[in-house]
Amino acid sequence: MKRIPRALSEVIESFERLPGIGPKSAARLGFYLLSVPDGFSEKLADSVVNLKKKIKICRVCFGVGEDEICEICQDKKRDKKQICVVERADELLAIEALGGYNGLYHVLGGVINPLDHVGPDDLKIVELISRVEGDGIEEVILATNPTIEGEGTALYIKKKLEGIGYKGKMTRIGSGLPMGAELGYADQVTLSRAFEGRREI
Ligand SMILES: [Zn+2]
Image (cartoon, rainbow, N blue to C red; front, side):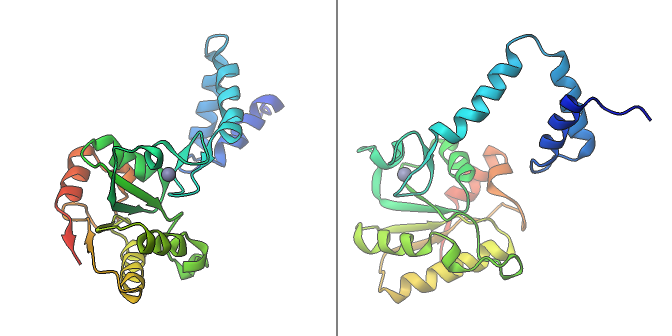
């Protein structure tokens, strides 16, 4: 079999490391890039390099932005009494894209998962608890995914909040989202319904 030229195989190998991309898709993308108009590959390469250079993790909510404190946390018009807890920053963006929520967020950075050796201390749970303690929060929306780990993490946070004597509302999204679903991939109608239909836990 003829070997793939090195410059091409390097690109294919890089694509293969991306989540959800298998060897065939990686090869298809690699060959596709050979056919794109001039300028596109430079733009793609630059934007990937800039990603790490320019994007910062917000030191309040751990979402992404271009400053130390993200736009949402800085926005004076946001409702500072509500805080929506998500696993990842892309889920924050999915909820934000619905357009109906005007509160704050908190990105945990994952879920508690003993099989993957992820414990509470590996997530931004302590930071969440201290935000709730200090910021006059009236509703904590637990919007972790409806997976076993997501439910377990929501329950863990609930207990921690009860432990500090938090008296506000704690709600859980989920109605309409199938078990095992991921918020970031749900369609807008389903996600909107799950968000609006959140219940107190
Ligand atoms: Zn922020």
